[in-house]
Length: 127
Image (cartoon, rainbow, N blue to C red):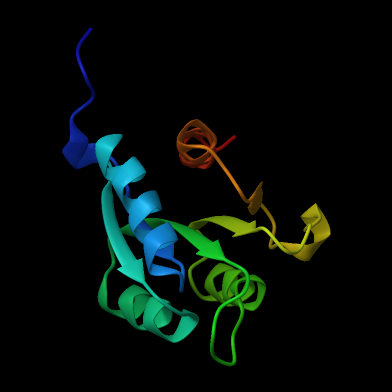
C-alpha cells in the first residue's frame, strides 16, 4: 500500500494549555503524518493563524487561560477563516452541536489516539 504524499496533508494547529496534553496530541498527529503547530492559548493561536496561511485544521481545548476560551476561539476562527476545520475538546463540559460553529466537531476528553486521528481525518475529508 502506498502512503499519500505527506506534503499534501493539512497543517493542524493544536491549542491546549496543558503542556503534556498538547504534546501528546501533537505526537499522535505527527505520527499520523500531519504537520503540527502548537499554541498554549487562544491569543497565541490567533497570532499563528494570522501568520500562517497553511493551517487547515484547528484542534482546541475549551478551558484555557485568558479572555477567550476554546468555544469562543472556534467561533472567531470560523468567522475570520471560514474554510478552516474545527475540532473542540473538553473533559469538563459536554458540548452540543449548536455550541459550535457550523461544521465544528466535538471530541470528549479523555480521547484515544484513534479517536483523535479519526476526528481529524473526518473533518479533513469533509465528513
